[in-house]
Length: 346
Image (cartoon, rainbow, N blue to C red; front, side, top):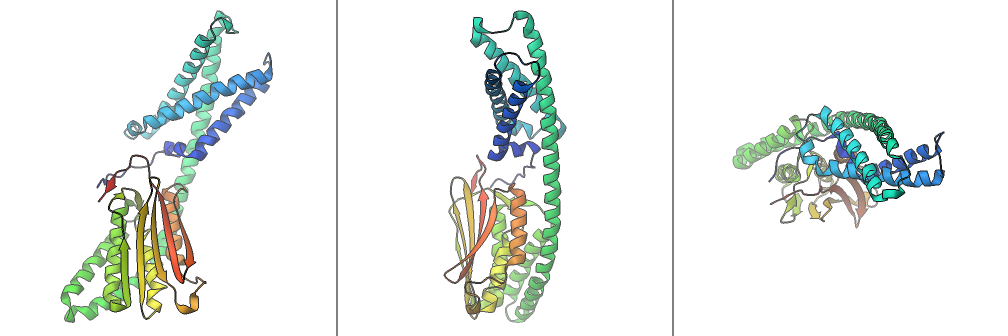
């Protein structure tokens, strides 16, 4: 299993479809500004069309080059990544203008003496637009990081409300087992240590397999507490994509399934199912609802909010947690995007 943790880059925001669409729209706006600028000669629609074509080529070539170089960019200091992006933008602009000059041949409308002036103008426009783009990306990234920190603080407050309840129940179970079944009491304490080690480590990203293992530790503890009242069913694929999730983002959903389902029933069960497609991983946690709550959900909100906050922040809005009630069961589904090229782990 691949465990190396890749820190996010500000340029990661550029690989999303929304960001690419905004870049293309900004290019069209720039072409429109150039066509409407005072002093523009000739047919302004022609100027707009040619400018739009050239700008889109430059934008897409630059985005493509940055994507192909993303692994190398990981090893560069953050302050150098922006300058490299501007250099690529400038190089692609010169390339597009040079290609247009060669392809047009004798039809090129400018005199040779004006060629240098055109390159200077293109360079000035590219530098101005590139610096504005870097400033916008920097502000977007800072806003995103502030939002992540705020959500992490909110999560910690939410988890602080969950842990005491679980801790007290676990210690009571351990005390009851220590004389009659010391082996099981020892296993309970080891599982508890693993869970609290993960909790005390603070907000971080871990492989999905590790997060599911933490959820399994939790369910093993609860199985000792509930005995025959609890049945746990796992359905996992043979190979799990090595997607990364926030630590303790799925375990709270399992805990809620216990607290608002099994704990309030004479007998209950928890189902944890993981399914994959080439693009996403779905983690499904379901539990029965007490008879008086069929069709209505009164609980689950603390763990649900905590998981939604962490997964939404980590995936830039592409991952999410949604819930529903079907056939008397409360179902929480975690949707996680799979990045291109991620390995699988057994």
